[in-house]
Image 1 (cartoon, rainbow, N blue to C red):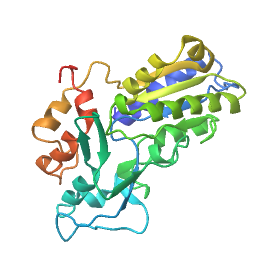
Image 2: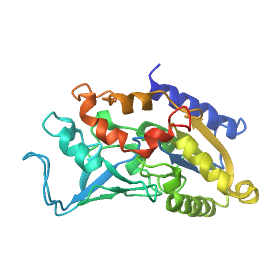
Image 3: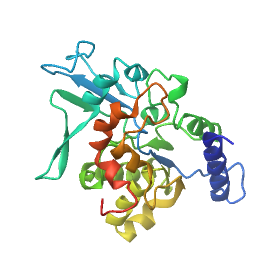
Length: 267
């Protein structure tokens, strides 16, 4: 069974359970999708004075697709991608910022477009939550109303998620309100699960009792993962066969989330 089909089957079983045996499920608990590492579209607007080499674009008039834009994985473009995607770490503040001249934007918070597809062109290899949302719509859910998304900067770790958690709180409360005061189910994938857990831990029990129905965990990274060790050591092509792992190592090493997802916090 493919990973996508396995996830969809798990989700179907979970929601049939919450319908208490009523397949028609007249009152649908609204669902908010919390994506994992790499599970959100990024757009970038460039205003750089220079680049690594001539095939890299220095300036753009508007925001253009960055992650997951497949053209950047071509051998002569991968350096451009790394330069635009990597973070700069401040050892004093213990926070990160984008590379100088790179402004990154994440769109459609509360919608699903930037978590259904990782490339806005909807190239078939970049589908993410699309098939799950498509199935949910067939059950009676409505995009942007009863099924919503939390696209976020997956490069970072919870110490920089203060603004994200404020937006999540407001989104959950709004979703509860526009769905007849029906409690919300959060569905997290991979890194989206510990990211959600940090959010739950800063909220009061009274707030959670009022607004949260359940949390559905898909492939949750609850005790860390081994892959970040490879990201730091040699880089990882993440399934893109034309990419040399060493080419993307600098970008992967610069993501605090790579360290946060290691099996031990002593890293």
